Image: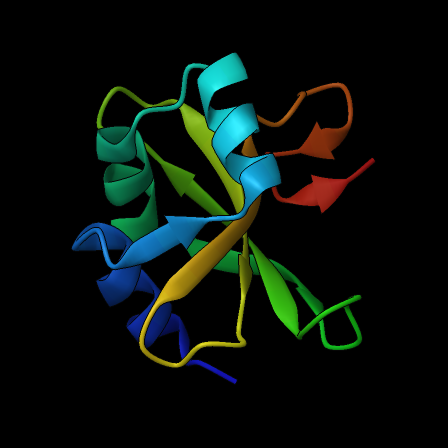
Length: 102
């Protein structure tokens, strides 16, 4: 499994790829590559999914420079590249401090 520092480094430098689902969601939710890099640079892991469907993954929380919270779920399958499974702006009605489920 990748370390948080590796994930942050890969997200902040743009060393990531989207799943088909994540690409569609980024467009629908108006989340830019720049926002992913910003949020990813200081993201923290809020949930781990070691038994996820295809490979172990983690849910990250990061904030853009404008303060927009973004959840980014990443796969740990490829050591050289972060694969983004999905991403979204968390709903405050479903999350405490965007990090703990209500």
